Image (cartoon, rainbow, N blue to C red; front, side):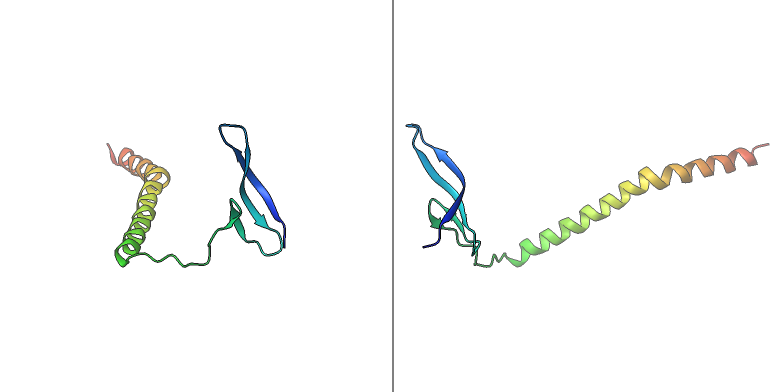
Length: 90
């Protein structure tokens, strides 16, 4: 039987140490308390959860673009307009 390399262990109130988290080196399988952690099942979400995630990502991207415009482009544009206004004043 292949040896599980212990990565994390924990102690209870009585001071006894327990196996926590481990991995088999050759296969890369994960173990918690000497039990295999199932990582083979695909996670599926409802369509509306996927839509909400996509809308949230697009909204975040749009807001980042607006804030980038305010910080980097708008001040330079505003300074240019002020210079034009000063030149036109009699």
